[in-house]
Image (cartoon, rainbow, N blue to C red; front, side, top):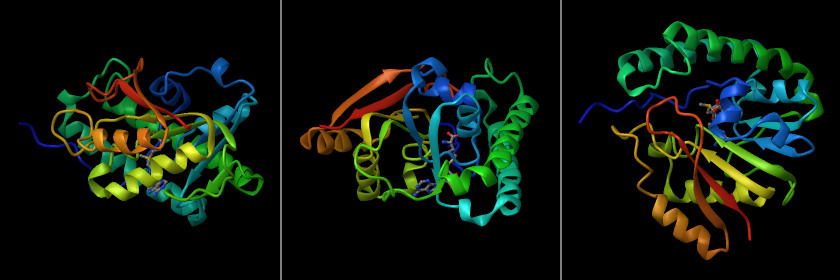
Length: 234
Ligand SMILES: C[S@@+](CC[C@H](N)C(=O)[O-])C[C@H]1O[C@@H](n2cnc3c(N)ncnc32)[C@H](O)[C@@H]1O
């Protein structure tokens, strides 16, 4: 058994739009005319890139109130934390997409800067919202599509059964359509297998009438993470 990839804390670390769209098996055309929530968006540039294309997307994260300078410092520090971890586990990564470690670092820094450049304009208009699962400040069915990347299952070792269930329920509550969750393989497990609480979460949500489905996606950074969970409310 090889050591786990797990990180020391939930990283303020974000993807650029081409990765974020691929991990949710989306493209810009699929988002046209939709109201989308990306929760958490962290320092991902997805919301900024969506806005530039006229796509109505809101991003949320608990720490946006820290301000641009603190978020830049945190984001840059977390890029180094994650890149060092990736370097120690190179063999677990599919390098087809990134090429090498330096290209990965550059992509993360570009996402962070694009996000920061959009934040000051986007916070007052509600494009970015300071919010934390499992309670989101949006009405029922407010969005047509809700995305959840690299939080619930990636970092599930930190989360109680109740937090995971309540968070999935909350994402379903604010969506009038699908909720897409990526990945479904936790960082703390040595092999990238589905979260062991998957079955019990599925049973609990299906009992409430939520439709639960796992779909393949055309993306994997860590080998074996080419699946997302798709939920739809009753
Ligand atoms: C690794 S980033 C994911 C960013 C983006 N979705 C992506 O895939 O690139 C994880 C984010 O989750 C945020 N976070 C931590 N606790 C949270 C909570 N209870 N609710 C929502 N977001 C949370 C962190 O601040 C961090 O920015």
